[in-house]
Amino acid sequence: MFNFESEAASRQRAELLETVLTPLLEDFVYWFGRSRELLVTTQLDFLPPAAQQDLIQRLERAESEVKTARMLYQATGKQVAIDMGPVTAWHQLLMECQAVGMRYRFAQRSEGNPYNGDSGPA
Image (cartoon, rainbow, N blue to C red):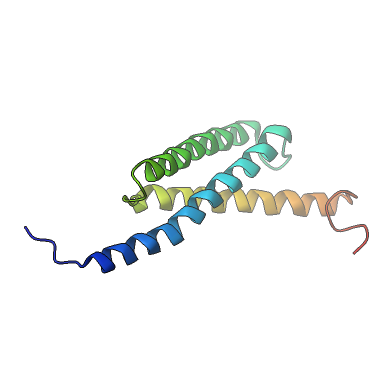
């Protein structure tokens, strides 16, 4: 079978993929790490310990998957894409962590914590 896609079109697709995929993977690593750090260092009153531990384990697994995908992407000269199934799962986990983080920040404000970022000089 012949591939009639021009080299320029192929290059454009690769550039577009890199433009989208590279920062996306970096964001996943960053936000998974931040979420994991919060969950490891803080017992959240609104989250049962077993649920918190499950979320930590899922974050560790997803963070490892993202790092592996990023490494493979780099190792292949950025010539491969990533299946949307895992990307969708990572995004759902990120949204779950965002909801936990928002609930945590709301609880901190409700308790009058002076270190919640709402006080101090503007």
